[in-house]
Each structure stands twice: as C-alpha cells, then as structure tokens.
Length: 270
Length: 270
Image (cartoon, rainbow over all chains, first blue to last red; front, side, top):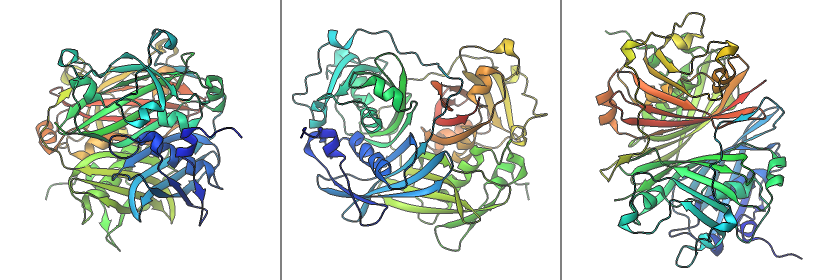
C-alpha cells in the first residue's frame, strides 16, 4: 500500500454521526506559527463538501472565514446544503473545536459547459522552476516543508535594504512530496504566500488571515493536465490600512493556464 | 420630514420575531433585468448585521452568494453571530423568500486601530467627473437610474467594432439622488459594473453574479470625508471560461483614497 500524502492525511475526514457531520484531526505537517496553515483548513472544509452524500458538480468558489485560533487537536465540520439547483449547489459550513465555532465557510459547486472563453491575465514570463533554488524550509514553520517553493520575486529576507514600495510576490510552488493537482490541493496552495507585510516591510509582525476566497477557473481536465508540475503563483496587495491588508493572487499552470484566483484579507500589527 | 432615499427604502428592515430575524420588501427602484440589483441585496444583508442588537464594530468584509432568483416581493433575513471576539465578529446570514433560501452571506465586523499604512493600488489619473456626460439610464434596467455613472473606459455600445482584448471598465459613480457614503451604499456600488462579458464582446448574453466579496478598507472617518461625491471605480476580469468569469474591482474616493476592493464570480451563457 502506498504511503498517504501528508495533505491527504491533514484533510482526512470521518463521516458522521449525521450526513452533514465530519470530524478530523490537525496534523503536524502543516503547522504554522500559531495553529495550522490556513490553506489546509480550507482544504478540509472543501473536502467535507466533496465527500458529502449530496455533493454534485465540481468546486467553483469557496470563502473561508477564520474566526478563532485552531488548536492542534480534533475538529468537527458540519456541511449544510442550503440550495440545490440544477447546475449549482450552495453550501454553508462551520468547523468547531470543543463545541465552539472556529471557522465558517461557504462553498459553491457547479457544472461547467463549453462556452466562448478567454484569459485576460497572462502568466508572467519567468525563469523555469528548475533553474531556481528551492526556498530552504529550515527555521520556517512546518507547512513550508510541505511545499517546494522557488521565489522569483518578493523574497522575505528581513533586511531593511530589501524594503520596496511593491509587495508583489511571484514564485513557483508545488506540493512536497509531489502530488497530482486537484481542487483541495489547488485551494491549499492558494494560501501559500507569506504575508504581504513581511515582503513589504521586511519585518515579521503578528498577522493572521481573516477571510479567504478562492475562485476555481477550470474543470478536472485542466487539473489532470497539470499533474504534479509546479504552479506559477503571484500575489499583490492593494492597501494596508489600520490593521488590515488585502491580497489578490493568480495561480497559473505550468503551461500558462490560469487555474485559480484567490483573495484574502489579513489582520496585522505594527 | 425629508423624503427617504431610494437606497434606504430598498434596504429597510423590520426586526423580529426573534433577535436574529428581519424582514424587508424588494422595491422597484433597483430592479434589474431578472430580479433586483445584486448590490442592493448585499446592502440589505449588511444592514441586518448593522441593525442586530449584538452588532459591534464596523464592516470589514462581506461575501454574498446568490443561490436562486429573487422575486419582487417580501423577504426574510436571519443573521446569526457565529463568533464574537474582542475586536471582531463573524456573522452568517440567509435571505429567504416563501421559506426557501435564495441568498447566503457571511459578514465580518471589526474595530480598526492606527498602524503603519500604505496603498499600493493608486487611483488612475482620469478626467474629472463633471467634465464627462452621465450614462443615459433610458432603456436600461431601473437600478441604472439609481446611480449617476460617467464612463471613462469600457462603455457597452453593443457594436462589434468596439470589441477589444481588455474588458476593463473605469467610471465615476455615485448614488442618484446623491446620498452621503456609508458602508451599505459603498457595498451596493461595488456591484455597479456591467458584466465584463458585455464590455468584452459588446453583446448582451444571459449573466448572473453567483458570489460577491467586498473588502472595506476604511473607517467611518474616510466615508464621512467622501460624503456624496463620486467614487472612481475600476473593474477587470482575469478569465472567462466554461460559463464563468471573475471580476476584481477597486473603488477610490474622489481624493484618490482606496475605500474598498471587490471580487465576484459571474455565470454567463454564450
């Protein structure tokens, strides 16, 4: 039997006691500075919808609201189908620990069909992943070891000389060990960026994602074409103001296809 | 007694029968091609949180999922405080008609405090609003008459010769009649853009917003400075693919201050 990938272990859920109930366990592989990496919590929530007996279609959109710290213990998820349409489903979710809601989410599932299509956000022209060094995960939170990241722009050096007026980050990223891309791993990767304020100020300050929204732009066929190759990922901020900044990200496949866009609002001090 | 502004009439709610319950009535002033303008539904949901007896802080983020068509009749909203933190609140909402959920939402309320701040998305340098003609609302859905829009870029002419490779829209926009800006009106305005596919293809095709997320970047002081002056609003698409396109928007105050960013995913045919 092949060894389970750490991502699959981190989002593994046991169904019950009702159709809407699931339970899981926070794992060490995706530990962050405080609590688990937010991308893996999002992936566990999406996994609950995908495993639900009433689930139809493929993921279109998810919003995750990180309401309270999550501890390294067990968690419960409830997934409620709020509206079941012919070609879309609207789900509401809550993740609880010890009976207290720690995370809420909404998920939209949909069926895709052929239409006129076009992409307006082209993938930047960059050096190949294999020509760049992997970001050394030593001294970083555990989740960084669960990704192979090769930074093209927006390195966090903590050196004042590297402060700029532009917090944009651009990197190649894939699961480590490699894992064929699916919706849950694409979602987890959409949260892979270091906080924009670390890049901008080249300082570590307390931060925490408050809400994350990821839009999936492709069907299963495009995910299968991507396989376990690295994604090109870019994140930008629009504004840092009075304790909150935003981030907007694009995630392209290796062939330059835009697979997902993702937005978040982040709390910061300092 | 001064006449109530049409926006305030459209989002007016009666509280009850429980603390979490509210009811309202769809009005004609914001009618869209099918059902009401989505921005005013979002504003009614945010209004429910703001009117709730347990509401604290000011709006930080809202996600609205448009799950089913809304008819021109009465509606009920339930607003549930899922988590009440010292400086933030997480709310879940549902809007129902005749007992069926038509819209779900999550809202985050927060208190803001002074920090290091900066804006990375500058307002484009454009012609003054008063030097441009108002978009004639004749022949348009009713909600267009509820805004004064002055298009700088991205006009929908329905002429094939105006098709371009870039669906970006840029316009000045304010409530009509003028109304001092607050969170509900800023939220409603964040949905004011014609569908990107109309701009891109210069054709009308069936479309509908499926999910909208708006981040509020400012406190009450900045809204008060803005007053009833026009906002500069820009919307872009990243990808149109298999029946869905995304839109990302920035909304700047007249003085160039970034007040909100907003993202949505839209269904389209064609």
